[in-house]
Length: 211
Image: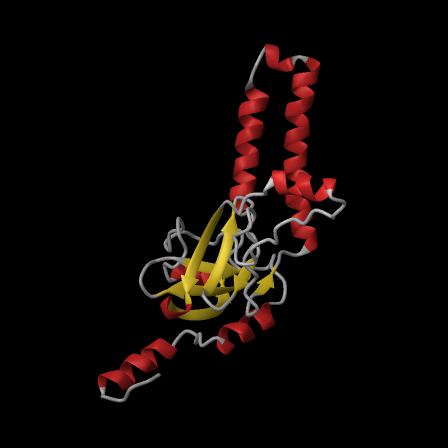
């Protein structure tokens, strides 16, 4: 509704206080409020020391690039820009961001939240508390052959959560906090440990439904 300016002037001339039209409570606001966070969400962030090590490494590469620009080294070679930029992208890609469990599924973001991987609860095949070596020998780790000999991080304890419909998986690793609580939250939301899916298939093949 527009404002009648002529009426406002007449009211002022007659000594009356001009009144403004009331705002429509049902009208939409130009800046909608953000959606509230899922109350069922539980976050499992990185350990402070590990996060700090990544931040220091990235900051060191940034300082190297800036220092090269200030000293004029970039006039002779752009290697600091190429090498430093590649190193920053590599560190951002390798940085395992926080894991989040909510009502929709399990989520993990990468590249500072620019990319997210999700496994919905109805697509969780099983979780497995194990080591990287067992996962590698089982062929469940991407880009790692089961035929390779002992690897550097083989003995790291992890919690693997795999998908039913694809080869997608998420890992709660040694750099994340609260492993026991992570497992507890998985079970509370209906995820089962490795081996349960075999028993489930065995029972269903004999006509016994398993919820």
